[in-house]
Length: 367
Image 1 (cartoon, rainbow, N blue to C red):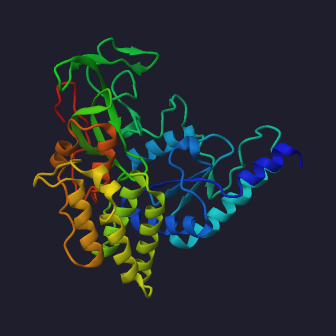
Image 2 (cartoon, helix red, strand yellow):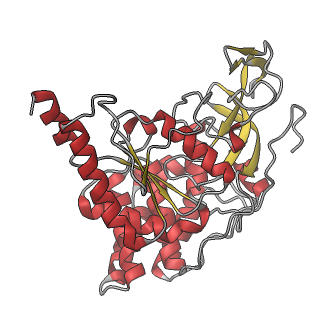
C-alpha cells in the first residue's frame, strides 16, 4: 500500500455522512443521527464535505430530483445509500465505510475514486446529464422539480434583468430597504440544508444577504406526515437542529442524546432534558444571537420560541403553535440570510403542519 492509499484509507475510516430524510422519515433520521454519534462520525454540512449520501425513506419526485443534484456535487470517492428501516442503518453505514476504505486502498483502474455499486448502494449517476453544481452550504437551487423556467436556470424565477449568461440568472436592480438601488437576484433556498426542514423551499429575492419578497412552498406538498411523537421528543429535535445552525455543535449533540434517551425511555431522560433546557435558556450568547430574529404573528421572536421549546422539553409548557406559510414568509422578509436560517430552525415544520402550495411565484409575485 502506497502512502496516498494509506492516507486515503485512514481518512475514510470515519466518513462524513450527508443525511437527507423525506418528511415521513423523521424517526429514521433520529435513528441515523444516533448511530452516527455512536460511531463518532460527523454529519456533513455540505456535499463538498461528504463521503456518503444517506437517503432516508422514500423521497417524492421533487425531493428525489434535489437528492440527485446533491449527489452530483459529492466528490469521489463517494457512496450513495438508501435506508428504509432503522434495522438496516448500522449495517449499511458499516458497509459503506468498509467499501470507501477499500476503494482508496485498492482503486479500480477505470475509476480510481468511485466505489463500485451494489444493489443497496447506488452510484446515482443515471439521469445526471445537464445538472449544474451548486454551493451546498447556501442551499441555493436544490429547488423544486429542478426546472426553473424555460431556460432551465437554477437561480430562481422572475425578471433577471440581463437574462441568462451561460445558464446562470443575472441580477437586476431594485430599491433596498434604505431606498438604494442594489442588485436583486431571484433565489431559491432549500429544499435541503443542515438543520432545515427537508422539502421546505423559500423563494425570494436576495439583495446582498437580505431576503425580500419571500414565498414558501414544499417540493412534495402531498408527502406523508411524520409519525406522531411526544412533545418532549419533538422539542429536543427542534433544539438539536437550531443549535447546529447556531454553531453550537456540542450542545446540539447533547440535544440529540437527550432526544434518543426520551425515545428509548431510558432512566434519567427527564434529568437530561432539564439540563439541556437550562443550558439552552441560560446561554447569553445564544440569546443575543436570536434576539429580534423571526418575529411571528404574535410578535414572538426566536428567543421566545426557544424558551417555549425548552418548557415543552421539560413538560412545563406547551410548544409553539405551527407556523403558517404566510407567517414563515413574514418572519423571513427583510431578514439577512443567517437570520432566515435561524428563524426557520426554531420551527417544527412539515407539509402537514405548515401546508403550502407546490408552485413558486411568477415574475409578478403570484404563487
